[in-house]
Image (cartoon, rainbow, N blue to C red):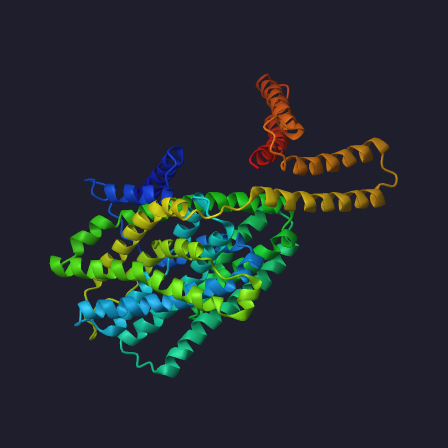
Amino acid sequence: MEPLFEVVLFLAIATLGAALARRFGLLAPIVLLVVGVVLSFVPGFPLVRLDPELVLVGILPPLLYVAAIQTSVPAFRYNLRPILLLAVGLVLFTAVLVGFVVHAVLPDVPLAICLAFGAVVAPPDAVAATAVARRIGLPRRVVTILEGESLVNDATALVLLRVATLAAVGSGLDAWGVAGQVLITAGGGLLIGVIGAVVIGFLHKRIKDPLLDNTLSLLTPFVVVFAAEELHASGVVAVVVVGLALGHKLPVLLSAGSRLQTMAFWRLATFLLEGLVFLLVGLQLRDLLTRLDTEIGTMVLVTVAVLVTVFLTRFLWIFPASLLVRLVPRVRERGTALPARVSAIISWAGMRGVVTLGAALALPLPGDGLAYPRDLFVWLAFAVIVVTLGLQGATLPMVARRLRLSPDDPVKDALAEAAVQQQAGRAARERLEAAADGAPPAVVERLRSVVEERGNSAWERLGGDARETPSQAYGRLRQEMIDAEREVFRVARDEGRITEEVLVRAYRDLDLEESLLWREGQR
């Protein structure tokens, strides 16, 4: 009973913290991290020790899967060069640099385990990057690059962590052994992801029940991860590959009902998991401090050295890499090189999160010839998370304003949408005329008017007039009508004139229509 109570308690606190963050315009990850740190020192509050398997196999896969299915594959492909420079090149650069810095400060610690720790703190977190970047409204290309980096860099870091850990425990890896490990881990994850996408896509295509589709979607990241881990491949690579592939094909794999239900479920699951993740990270502080036995001067020195290195490596890598990429003729012709202001905001957006803590907890235990201050390394990982999220995450909105990044042009988006909507309306009318034989003329005319209204609504959004548009008037008045209809059905149910089942069906239809009105109002 007590573990269940603690889970419910943590979810309630995470939900309340996220609600307060939205109410006061704050970033929820930072608020929940601070709440967790404070609660960790409250006497009698449950002591939490995160299991690395829970983080890397239980929490990370669904979050990566959701981020992957929501990522635009064309945009990902267009920005593939900067994404790979960050997700592979920068992770390796950071891991090596941090590893040598830690080894210089702690010369008694083997270099291999220092490099393993470098891999722990190298990757910015997918959850933190997505939550912060989208919340503050960064330009779409910046968000795509940060999300793409956070999807791929975990795989790079965890592969490097596995190789460095094997070297640290004396497995006798040589250059060919390292290459073999990378091939098995990354290549195996890629292969499993492709196979998973084919199999799961086949099942989605043939399942028509939204509940079964939703269940299959929930199981997908875990099935793929377990299959990859069983074969000693990268579960992270597998999940990202299957998520990107299925997300790109989602419009043709799932029915309308399945898409609505699946996306609603994943929004809820992501909201709860993200809140829980940052709260649990903050709750680790008290336990970490009680287990530390390193001399205070050494702890402060190595903490500062790691933090400075982690901060500087993104700038030392991104700006020279951006300049070198500009020299490539194809990049220069396509205009895909990153402007200096975009490079600056990406350099500052290096927030670490739960992956760093989970990977730190997965470091090998001292023994069998391996002697190093493991608790100190876990503390260093925690310090990197708190400082990067608290400093970079909190100041990212201010930095974005100071850099005067040009936001995405809503008029351009609305114009593109209206043009495609006009094309879609033309296709709908042609299909209607071809299939209208024998249908009542009133029905055909009503369907024509629906298509026309939808097209008019798209063009109305291009206007800058503050007056109420016809579509807005329609939404406001239809909302009043829906409220009146709901009240009549509720009273009829209370008076016994209709059953509960009838009320539920009526409310479902009205709720669907209202959700469409709400969506139109949010544009």
